[in-house]
Image 1 (cartoon, rainbow, N blue to C red):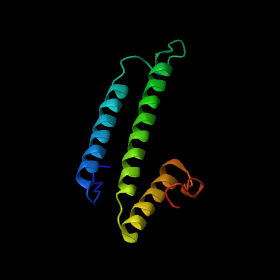
Image 2: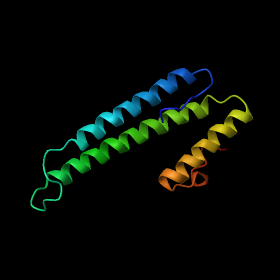
Image 3: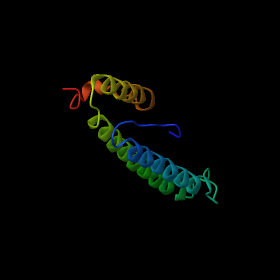
Length: 109
């Protein structure tokens, strides 16, 4: 995520947004990683609550990244750039989330 570079008319703005999401993730992870209680204590429900809050924030960041990449896809002006963005998104979805983008063909048509 640190080396994401998006071209096109809005590329610099979208790249800045991706960097912002990355820094937001680092902050969220630091808060979650800096817990002061024992997460293995079965009596304490704090870990379950904190983990659910962390996952909620991560899902929100995933939605932000999806919106950014949709904007990058919409900003493509030729077949070469469409292919490159589509290939990166396909690989990211398959590797990270095990989602087949061919099931979601709204932008491919």
